[in-house]
Length: 154
Ligand SMILES: [Ca+2]
Ligand SMILES: [Ca+2]
Image (cartoon, rainbow, N blue to C red; front, side, top):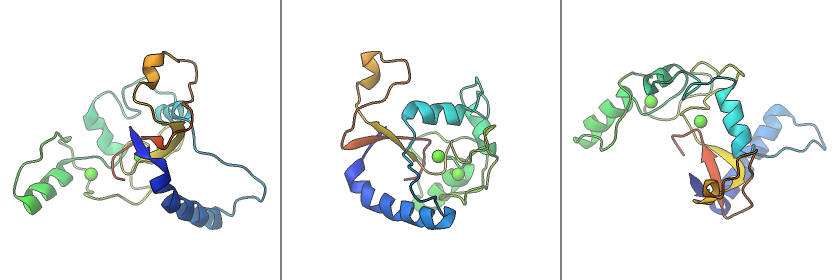
């Protein structure tokens, strides 16, 4: 999935500035976003299932804030119509983004890789990138669009 990078960059700069103060980053240290392949590796955390929580989407309720019963019920109540897409039947208790640490971390200790908010990746977004059959740690070139992973709120 791609998002316009330049449009979001000014907000991200402010967030990175705040993070820098919170974590007191070492002067001279260099950081960058993970590539999509690095993000995938970190999210999977050594698991071999569809999600790090298991193969069924219902297992996501333990590891992240996803479109769930809470979300579906809130939507029906507020808009008085059914959602036009599926949600899990479980209840994670959050309609909107949840505070970090509200769910179990994956085996690498990372929170919210599934659900809650999207994560930016270093790669530029190209809809046909994987059709080019680059399979060994691919990095898409820079683009106005960036890959985002780990939905679901923006
Ligand atoms: Ca939810
Ligand atoms: Ca996420």
